[in-house]
Image 1 (cartoon, rainbow, N blue to C red):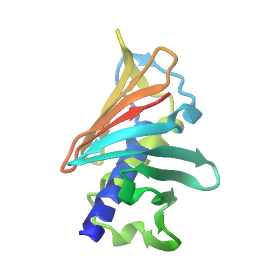
Image 2 (image 1 turned 60 degrees about the horizontal axis):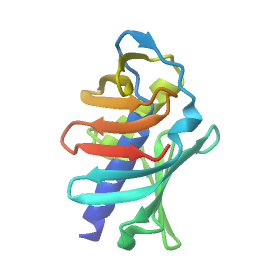
Image 3 (image 1 turned 90 degrees about the vertical axis):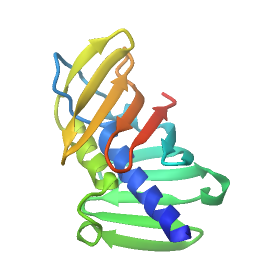
Image 4 (image 1 turned 180 degrees about the vertical axis):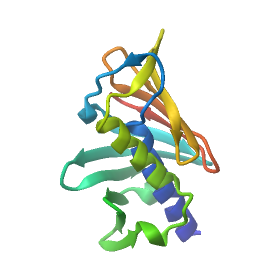
Length: 168
């Protein structure tokens, strides 16, 4: 069951990374400060409530540090290019993207983030701010930004749906 939980967290992490910077298709081009995506978050993933922080820089890719639930406090997940590294209590394991099943929410999330950070996505203006939505690799996502263009809520559909709320 520990391996299943780690697999769920790995999928969650990549999903989070991708959707955070998802590219939209609607009316308004939204200038997004990519640093605004890297903040504390809470997420609902399957039957698991997760808290942590997401960080990034050009050299190391994306990193997620889990702080809750208590049994996962200290789990770190780093996505860099086509590799994922899991670290927990001094143990570390790195995986190649090709070693993970093709449908994987972690890679989907990372693909979306890369797309949004490296483009000027279109968004729909709403009363709550802006909504970016689209499809990456057959998986739908929706990202709500406030009027300051900071992430508020990210949802990713698919076999393993996730909802993420940001503290920004």
